[in-house]
Image (cartoon, rainbow, N blue to C red; front, top):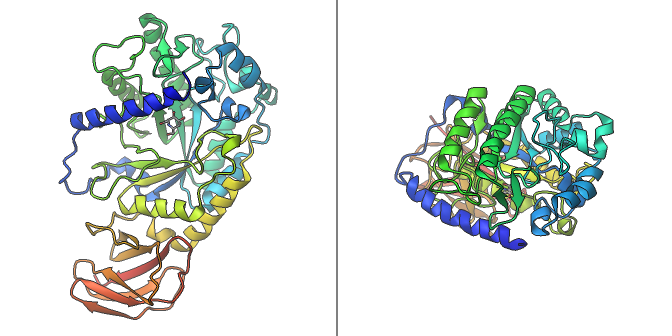
Amino acid sequence: MKQTAKKFITLLLIVAMALGSVAYAPDRTASAYSIPANMKWWADDKFGMFIHFGAYSYYGQGEWAMSEQQISKQKYQTQYAANFNPTSFNANEIVKYAKNAGMKYVVITAKHHEGVSMWDTKVESFKDYTGKTTFSLQQYSKFASTKRDVLMELKNACDKAGLKFGLYYSIVDWNHKSQKLGGNLSSTMTSMDARAAYITDMKAQLKELVDTYHPAVMWFDGDWTYSNKKPTLELWWTKSDGQDLYKYMKSLDSNILVNERVCRSFGLGDFECPEREIPPKGNEPKRPWETCQSMNGAWGYKKSEEKSYYYSKNLIQDLASVASRGGNYLLNIGPKDNGAMTDNSKKILKDIGKWMKKNGTSIYGVSASPFKKDPKWGTYTRKDQTVYAHVYKWPKKKQIVLNRYKNKKVKKISILGKSKRLKYKVKKNKITVMIPKKAVYKGDTVIAVQYKK
Ligand code: FHN
């Protein structure tokens, strides 16, 4: 079972989501959703950093390598996890780049599918294949000698910088004794008793994480071994497990935000998480949602992807398009084997930061576009009495026709980052604006239309 598992899981998720969307069929005609009070910071912040970091970073072939290459537990543990020694992990540098890029929260993998606990877990069953050593960064890898706690380092750096701190936790765990690597969904339970024991121990780990790091967000994943009947060894996770897990998290911290992947497609959790996709206009989730995206084709560090990063301008457009539909954007970095950020991720974050410095007001705290359809040249966001036209494709002629917001009177039109007022003509529900020959920013030049109250 190589890539097939991933493809099968993707296919399964599509089916599950389709079924799920039947089960949870939000009223597509419903007006835009309201944001619960405890999510206001999240909805206003809009833009976060995802970090995939684990023993797979050392191996350098992506976070699915163990499953794709069917690497035995013993080999993965002794040849990769044991040698993981990310001494160059620099939380302050990562948070500096995140903050300067305009990111307001950070979510890092505490435990990915590989099962390496990135903190000094005391939960008994999370051991290596011999059953003797705790399978964690602090107890099992070369890094143990540093006595460092990378999650705490990152949390402290976030606290100091005023960014919110979140954790990612995978429900499937390829190295845990309860599961065998394999089957169509990458993880098969060894017995139903093992399943019950694992769920108890998973909750014990989650309590450790909440009590130690007080994350503002718990981002679950690996919920796809889904059974819509009684659990089986291969389909060992159910909707009621997801409901129970969500309730448990809220019992640990009533303010923690939990994503829908406690068991996806049933409207569980506090927000939906479309992955690598921007929901089509008019088909956005009717509750809080966040698109997650990587900077190249991999989440965890993958050497072969280091030459295939997406263009910064396209990632900026994604950010604006997600905001224009009412969503959040969680953009991923995959630190290298030694824990350092890749040069390409630093460059992209710098590019985005330059744009956000002048245009962030058209992203933070905005509402979705007030218009049903997107123009060919880009999209809109709105904040109070200002509508922002995000112009991805700058018109050749020196004018652009914008939609007029609720037939309000225009107060001022300018390009964000420039003080010069632009000339314009209002005719019915359209505004023709005279614009410079050249766009100010590659990818997204924002025209701010301020209306009178
Ligand atoms: O299998 C994971 C994958 O490794 C990565 O963590 C992404 C990020 O959202 N989630 C799963 C794939 O959908």
